[in-house]
Length: 165
Image (cartoon, rainbow, N blue to C red; front, top):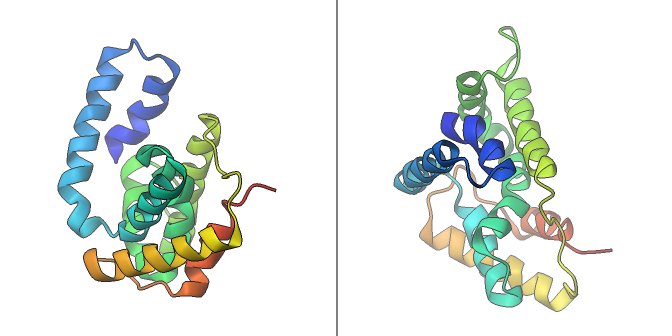
């Protein structure tokens, strides 16, 4: 996580910055190693469906829903996100875990915004939304460790944010 916060924007702004790109490759490797315990199952499950239905590149699809899924996990991830916030220097020393977790999520949203990432999908019909909710729920619920199971209503709220208006 430290590598991502230190190098992602640098790599984004200058694709020729080999130090930043190398650091991001290392960060990607570490992220892959931690996948089983990181609690990002719903992020990937939704991303898989967006790739299947719309051809959305997996990294972009992950970024489209990552902070929203973290927010949906709520109190079940506050302490872990607070630890990450402290690790990367976000927040004040006297902030409690909930405040730090929300600041960490906000930092991800800000990073995503800085990179002008697409956040909505055209032609996301109600039928396709239902497909994503159903398929992502089944995939994450059966294949990945998650800090909290999200119900169809939670997933629908996340998916609603992807619908282009």
